[in-house]
Each structure stands twice: as structure tokens, then as C-alpha cells.
Amino acid sequence: MADTEKLKTLVVTDTFGKAKALKKFLPKSYQVISTDGFLKDFPKTKIGVDENYFPNYITVRGKGDLLQELKRESLKARKVFFAMNPDGEGEFLANQCCELFGVNEKSRCRLVIDEMTKATVKKSFDNARAIDKNLVAAFQAKQIIDKVVSHRIGEYLACKIYRGVKVGRFRAMLLRYVKLAGEAKLDGDFEFEKKFTPEVLQEIALANLNFSSTKTRIVLEQLYEGLSFEKNDFAGLIKFPRGEEIFLSSDERTPDSVKSFLTPNQFQLYELIYKKISGADFENKFALGGVCNEQTLMATLDTLKLDWANFYSVGINSLIRRNYISNNEKIFTVTELGEQVLSALEGFFNELFSVETYKKISAQISDIRAGKAEKISVIKNYLTEFEKSFSAAWKSLGENPQPKDEPAIESDEICEKCGRPMLIKRGRFGRFLACSGYPECKNAKPLMNYLPQKCPKCGGRLTKRIYNGGRIFYGCENYSTCDFNTWDEPQEKICKVCGSTMFAHRFKDRAPMFYCGNENCPTRENHPMNKILADNKKRYEEKKLRREKNRG
Picture 1 (cartoon, one colour):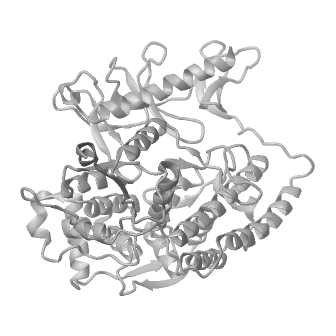
Picture 2 (cartoon, rainbow, N blue to C red; picture 1 turned 180 degrees about the vertical axis):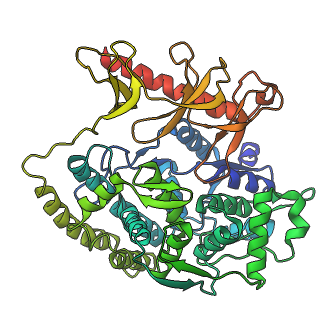
């Protein structure tokens, strides 16, 4: 009996911020662990969906140890609860965890927490329910459709344009409307609805605070997940910000009463939300037409009556990262590559990637959520039509089409060995410089974009490089003698203690973590980044060993 009493109740959540909040509200007999997003997901380079539209998930890279830890802790726990986001994605992850940890999804294991307050968290345990299979099915239907479409379109564009060019349903539609807005083919004015939706919030945050959609999303998560106020007073200021409307957790917490506990960004956004809910006036008109910026693009999506808030920032950032659009002086312009993508899709996928079809599929997914439609029917109906269009597009490539390599671009650099121009090429590990005199001259070196910040290890200049697939990483200019490299973005500010470059480690679902790049700096003692960086290094070494073993 004594051993039974020592068993803890395990609460599994999806973000570190939420785990931190729940620990504040729960007694010591409860253990809280975050999955930090999905534990299993589709493979990056394979389609991951079989001919019967059954998903084949794999463990997310780097999550193996965490998954094993969670399995161990769940076996030791007296009871396991899942406190993921109160939406379809959260329900899907909770269901995934039930399957991985052997928890009965019909048991009262699901906590629905729409605001991070002590009373709401307590109430969620009283109202714990079974996994909602309709919510899981709805999320999975969209996930499978999007995965199949993006993978197949990637195969087509690799042969039509070159390897690495891909786009999904929402991003193809977004790219098209960047072009239309830039050509001033969307005229008229738009006024906000009275309903305070996430879309309206992003628009007024941009108009009044000049907050980008990404910045707004990150700060919203912070306001939802909770903040410390007076001693033993920890709470979220807003309810879950990805529902149909934005609400306050308590209107008694006025902006002025909590200002001293918030960062400037948190205060500005909370004050804006508070004023909007209390009925303050805002400039409610955006003009459509002329140039394409975030305001006109958001307003355009609103006139199309799309629910875009949860996908916009990720979509627009992806288009910029892939060089389909440029963002110069906050004006969006479709690039030459973006025009090639639109041209390749034109005539084959117009209807399937149209606003009308997107809304139709969204409505069908809502029906799955409500138990009015079958997941497999919605998936099959859309993808059957998609495969017809894909087949026509594929046939247009001719017999036995093959993926193309990205064309080499002449750089401004001259080969130091033979004096000929260096070419920018793409290889396994991203873009690099190679001599145009190949094969006579085999000189090659990394393509570097020099930064003003200094390497915290040797003092050389830091460089910005693009890894294969478009991911950016940073390294030292003295790469042959200095092994410093990181995915984390170097900052303009330097460490106040040792003077080394500061870095920002960015998470998918919470604010960035800033740290000194000098691992011997006193500020790095017991810093949470130490474990993250150690895990990254361990994964790199394991991957390096696997490559060497395969070559051997």
C-alpha cells in the first residue's frame, strides 16, 4: 500500500510553457512532462501514406529519448492525463500518446483547458473525458490530404523546375493571391467584422502595433500559457487564442495593473486585446489593390471568407524562405521562381487549389469533426480528383521525366586556384561554390554570407549558410580550423558578462530563448540551453557515425 501511495499522477502536455504553468497549479504528487509537439509524424522525404490512405508515422528526429522517458513514466504513474491544446491538433496528439503509452482512449484521460487559471485547471480534472475520435479523424483527414498533395506536387515540380521546389494547397493559394494583390487586381475596401476572431486580432495588431503575424502568434501563446504576477499568483491573461473568438481570462486584470509583470510586447498586445473587447475604436478599413503587403493580403483573405489565422504566418514565411516571394520594405513580390511555380500549376490544379475548393474541404472536415461525415470518404473524394489532375500534369512532362538539378548561378567570386568565375551550385548539404573550370579545376568551398557578429569560439566572423532544404545555419568563417556552428540566430547584442555574441534559440510554439554563445560564460551555468545544445551535438555525432559506417 505504501508503494501505491508514492505513485504520481502523470500529466502530459504539448509545450514547455504549458508544462511550466501546470506545475504551478498542481500539487507535488503530480508530474508534468511536455512532448514539445508531435512525438511521431510523417517522414520528411517520403510520402508516408499508403494506397489505402493509411498514414505511416515515424518517430520525430531527436524525440527517441523523450519518447522512451514518457513511456517509462506512464508505466510508473497511478493515472495519466493529456492536457494538449483544446483543438483538433491537441486531440490528435493526445490520441497518439494513448496509443504509444498503452492508455485506454475511452478512459477519462483528456483534459480540456481553454484558459490557464487555477480554477479552470481544477475544473478540467473534474470534467476529464475520453478522446474525441471525431476531432482526431478531422485533423488526420486534413493532415493526410496536405501530405499527399505537397509530396506529389514536389515530385512534379522537381521534374518541371528542379529538385527542392514544392508547395501545398494553402501556400499555392496564398502565392496566387500575393500575385493578384501585387497586380492591383483586387479592388475595394474591407471592414472588420464585429466578431473578435484570431484573424481580426492579427490585422489590428499589424495596423496598430506593426506586429507581424508571427510576432502576434508568439506573444498570444505567452499570454495564454501564463505569467507570474504577485507571489503565488500565476495565470494566463487570455483564453485559448486559436478558437473562433478571442476572450479574456479575467476582465479584472487591467493592462495597467499587470504592466510591471509583462514585457513591452506582451503589454502592447494585451492592452490592444483588452481595449478591443471593452469596445474601443480602431481604424477598420484596409484598401485592396496597389501594392501587396501584409495588410492588403490579410484583408484579401478576409474578403474571400477564409479562416487563415492559424496557417498564414507559417505559410507566408515558407514562401519567403523558399524564395517564391520577396519581402522588400514590407512589400511582397512574387519572384521569378514563384512565377515558375504558378505557371507550372496553371491549367492542371486551378480548381483543386481554388478558394472555393479549399473552403469546401474545410467544411467537409468540420462535418467530420461533428460526426456528420466519414474521414476516409472526404480524403478519397479529394485525392481521387487530385490524382487525375496530377496524372495530366505528369504526362505533360513527356516520357520518363526525371528530377532536374538547380541551375548553377555565376557568383562574384573568382577561383583563387585558376582565376575563373565560381558558380553557385546545390549539393547534398545545401548551396556551395564550385569552379566553372570543372573538371580541370576541382576547387569548391561553402557559400558564405558574412555577418558582422563574431564567432564565440575563435573570434572570426560568423557566416550565414543555407542547408539543403532551405534551413539556415550559422558557422565560423574559419570552418577548416574552427568547428563552431549552430542553427540558432546570432543577435546584434552581446553578452553583458563576457562580451560574446548572443544567440536566439527558436521554438515552434513559444517565445525564443536567448543565451550567450560562449559555453564557458558564467551565464551558461545551469542554463537550459546546455541540454538542448548537448542533445543537438549528440544527434549530429550519431548521424556522422552512421554516414561513415554506410560509406565503409
